[in-house]
Image (cartoon, rainbow, N blue to C red; front, side, top):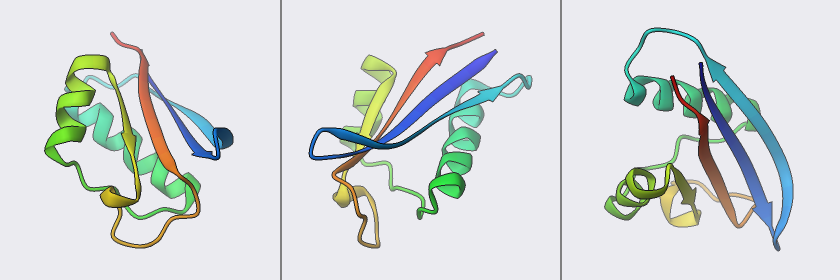
Length: 88
């Protein structure tokens, strides 16, 4: 089972959070992108842009923070954090 936890923060307080589970046989990358799509749908957000900094942070820590720089439209929070909490 693959699970990804997503949270939005404003002034160090959690505004929204959700956990997305994926039991499919897809690759890890596909599972991350599908889960991020679901998070964006649930939070009514545009998809963030993966910058080099975001990719390297996610590879090292299995966690990444998307700030305003990663979004095309304005967002009402300081950052969106996604974290892989369980992998197959």
